[in-house]
Amino acid sequence: METEIHYIKDKSFYSNSKKYNVAYKTKNGILYNGLSEDILYSRIFNKYMGKVNLIFTSPPFPLNRKKKYGNKNGEEYKLWIANFVDRFKELLAPDGSIVMEIVNAWNRGSPTMSTLGIETFLEFINKGDLKLCEEFIAYYKTRLPTPTQWVNVERIRVKDALTHIWWMSKTEKPKANNLKVLQPYSESMKYLLEIKKYNSGKRPSEHHIGEKSFLTDNGGSIPSNLLAVSNSKSNDPYLKFCKMNNIPIHPARMPEEIPTFFIKLLTDPGDIVLDPFAGSNVTGFVAESLGRKWISIEANSIYAKSSKSRFKSTIRGKALE
Image 1 (cartoon, rainbow, N blue to C red):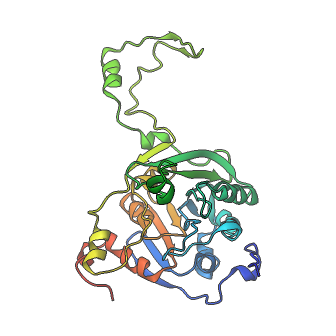
Image 2 (image 1 turned 45 degrees about the horizontal axis):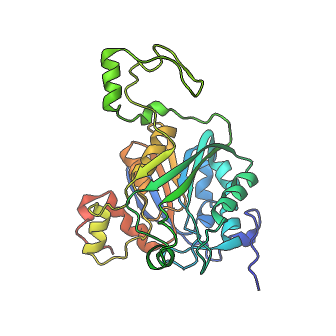
Image 3 (image 1 turned 60 degrees about the horizontal axis):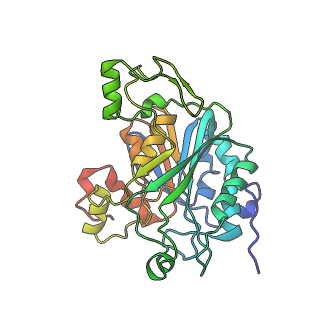
């Protein structure tokens, strides 16, 4: 018998337990341990209505093989994610943004990719009547070659190293400023700025470059929507703490560069950042370091408690209670 999934307005979407607790607090944030579908609709979140400036998250992956951090798949996964959109909109500030990473999935036992990720995004954005501000691609430069069977064994595919990140909002012009995420100029651009001379004129592409178009020093170059990151970091406090205390490490940790980029681009110091699927709480840690307020939710109690090691150096060498 197939499981029937209802939208958030139906009580059947809630879990039976309704139990959650505060894993820890910091100067700027708080992490709740429990199910997002319970906590987001609890009374404690009424005070955040219309005040969250950025909802940044990477939900559990729609994988065929069950993971310890919990994951759904197929139609159940798609509708489960879509069920959150109405509450997200209620919590979001009028000029706030939703940024969601949805990773790729492969069809079980087949060297073919699933369209589930795209379907999930479309279900979410259409149900919420949201605006798509921009699509981003995260390129994980050091990702291991997977799926193993098709890449390493039969060698009929190349490794899957990309994920989609969708930037959405209730409005066409949410708060954003790309001057906050400028990248260092290349050596050639630095030279042009120094000599103050550029080969202007019409290009084969029919674009016309003015004499001063590229000679203004803005402090850096505008980044693209391709985010190249490394997911091979092995010396951060969280990993050291987990290994030292024989605590399970979250298997899908997000590189800090990704939340850093979007928190800088879409928020100001003092703004509120929410991550309803926190994992090892990289989002909360980055938000704290950038002077933003943050709220995180994590269902797994071990991951929730151990993520505290990102914030307090005094507990890195001590076992969790």
